Length: 340
Image (cartoon, rainbow, N blue to C red; front, side, top):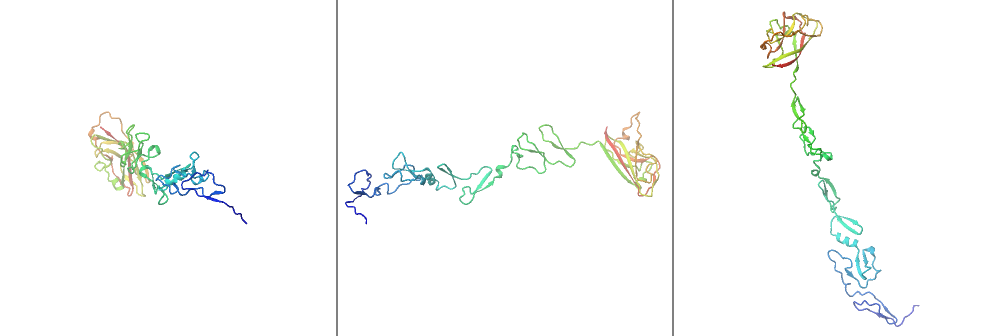
């Protein structure tokens, strides 16, 4: 059975009273040591920046009431002052901000992905969904030569690329692609090459193939000579260097008759001084023949009109060839053009 304690008095503090060190009458018990009737217990104003440290005073707050792990502590130097720890205050400040939160000790930061000249972001703050990056090609091109590029955004198709005017300068292009037969020629130091025509080749080759009918139609009067090398124009002379021929034999018809096959200037009797043997072209097999150069050093000048701007023709010294049906005779002449 419990005990009955007589003469117990109940002490009810007045509003705002904070003097708990006074002596109580014997047997009196202080039921409530916390005053809830006065300010600031009726409400604490919160500014737009949140509660700052020690901005609220709880005069009856004991030092061991708050738990720093909850974000609220008590000042060691200002008794009964409420301290809002940095983390709680940072969370309050970050509440209306869109983006990512990073933590630096007790300090928090709101972050968003930032675009650069080469990288952009879809949904950079992550609010509407996961962020995704995309490449800004306008910020990448042209790639500098120093970074392994050409320094060019576009290039003329098929044109040749050359180095820039400096080691890290944009590449350059040779204009155009030239035409058939041209070559890329140097323009000297510090200049782009250019397309140029091949120089005139003075050593040339002329070929001519005659049927049996055409070959046997050549007569000894030079009126029926056939042209091997056309005239090269005023002030020029065709200088023959060598002369070869080929008989393509078709059994069983050999050429008969005939005479010495020679070269002439035009259809006159002015010889070029290349001639075949008088028994050439009469064999009964396919074979090659080479002509002899009969020229001797001239003791007197040759009249220019007999050689200048004249065709080189194939003629005969005498009788025409006969027979040889279906055979062909081909000639190859190596020559140069002399300007006089």
